[in-house]
Image (cartoon, rainbow, N blue to C red; front, side, top):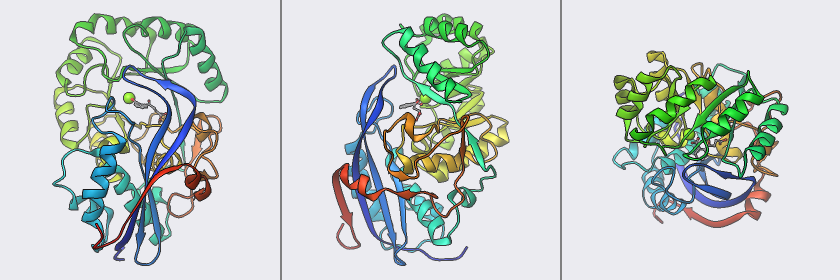
Length: 376
Ligand code: OSB
Ligand code: MG
């Protein structure tokens, strides 16, 4: 479409929401999240929302909520304010000189996509090229105090209908919990995620996981350690999946060349937005690598962007797009995102397809900033 858009006002809202269940990985622990909602307003008055889903601390990626606020308010938003554009990909190219800062970029890029969809009155999934009407969700379960606590969580999620369960693992929480869950659920689609805690010295330990018929082992080694991922993949038949390692298309190219992965986790946040996430999907599709959409405990805005992305044809594995209620007592979108039998409907309405609960957002806002042209 040739409509020209122009962002005439941009707002950042730092919103704090408690998780219904504390979440622990090999690298961090959290009970509440501060995500930054990005609100872009077009000259026509249309609004697009995006979500910067950075964790508070730099343990998953180098960014924090404060660095995202700084980069968005000082660099990303000033670069796009008052600048005519016709396609969200044009906007992302205005900040091509800004290195890294993928989470901050992702929130602004998503808001631009949603604004574009709103102006065209089309669903976000449709303008991305999505083909599915519904997407299959899995759940990601953190490290629990005991194996019995973990089994309670798995039982709850399996009874809710989720067909795939991912378990967070670390040095003292790998073979035993995986054995316990596999014994209780012999046929469950089960995978593990180490968030990069292991090193080359742990290859033999990771090989012990082979016997549990896992769908994949996600990010066993540090993000930049592609060679050890390739070494593990040569030694095991369980597919290695990369998450933290892949922040750019060039990272994906290198990993494919090294045969360091057989499955790709695509996160909108980690790739720096929907434009790059879709490009990663296209490249993986060409390479014959199945993909799924990872999550960062997004609030409703980021969650619906993940659902839209997951409707692209290459997302053939269950994605971390569980229902809102797994994370939040009340989500910031109305209606909340729901899953029936582990299946989430792709919204058919324009933009994100759900309304923002502006009252809840206002009640949970802990910081706000408005930028207009000339006032940056
Ligand atoms: O590695 O996928 C990860 C949450 C925070 C940081 C890293 C990860 C995760 C998850 C959550 O696994 C997935 C979800 O949103 O349900
Ligand atoms: Mg992961």
